[in-house]
Image (cartoon, rainbow, N blue to C red; front, side):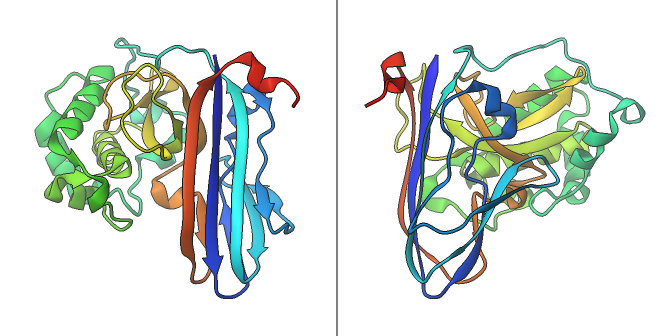
Length: 274
C-alpha cells in the first residue's frame, strides 16, 4: 500500500523569529519513503537539520517577518496491515528493562505520574500484567473521555483530562501514558499521520497522537482515542509527551493562517513523473 502524506501550513510573524520544526517523517520510516520527504519553505530560508535526544529529525531556521509557508507531499510504502497485536506480550520487571526505556517511566510535563499513581493502582492493579493491563487502560480512557475539538487546550495535563473528562487525541494519549508509567510500563508519546484508511471518514484531517508501550521486548502502538487497530499509521516523532514533539515551535509571537493536512491511500501512478 502507498500512502500520500503531507501538509500545507502558513504562519505569520511580526518580526524575524527562530523556529524549530519536527515536520519530517521519523528516521525509522526512511526505508519506506517512495517519494521525497522534504521540508519546503516559502520564502526560501536556510534550514539546518539535527537529531534530538529521542532520535527525531528536527529543522532549525529563522523565519522572516511576514508570512512563511511550510509544506511537504511525501509518499510512503506501508504494509496495509492493522496495528500489530500480541495479547501474550509480557510486562518486564523494572530491573530487566533496557536502559533506553527507563526514561519513559518518569513523570513529565503533561504526565503527572507522582500525582496519579494511587489512582492507577486502584483502577488497574487487579488486571493481569502485560498486554491485558495496557488494553484495560486504553478501554478506560476511551470510555472516560469525550472527544471534542472545540475544547482542545494546549496546557491540559493528564490529571486535568481525568478530572474534566474531555479532550482531543493528545489528551487521551497523555492520560493512558500516565497510567502505564504509574504501573511500571514504559510508554512514549507518538505523533504523526493517521488517515481514514479502512474506517469511515471521521472529519477534517489533522496530525494524530497515540502512544507506544514497551512489552515483550519491543514497542507496540496503542491508540486510546480510536481504541481499534488502524491501518496506515505514519510516525513523525516520539518523546515523553507532547512537549517533546511539538511539530513547530516559534521563539516569538506568531499567528496561524493556514493549516491543512492530508493522508490518503494512493496508487503507483502517483509516483510517475509529471
